[in-house]
Length: 97
Image (cartoon, rainbow, N blue to C red; front, side, top):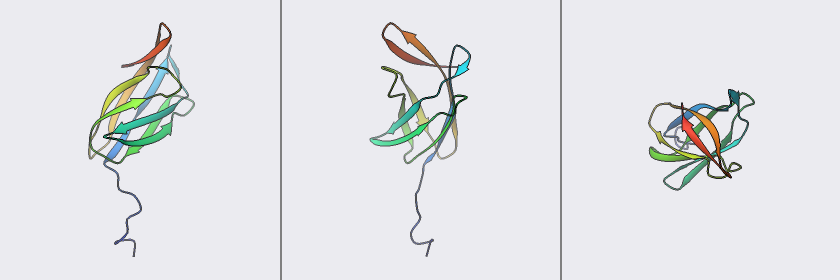
């Protein structure tokens, strides 16, 4: 029966880490791939791993850090993105490491 009704199909997995000042950032994450939003969070050390349902260009956002977003790509296999969270004025930005 499981062959006819797969539970969930994913395009791939996006993983990596988010740090600030050399320390892991604990934060909620949203990845928007063509309108399909996948949610997750970092662990205490800043590591994350989120399955996304679509392939292509996506945007990774940290909702509680105003302005903190970065482009990422979803592929059939795993993709890895490591970021540094930087405060810039009253907003934040994610810079790829």
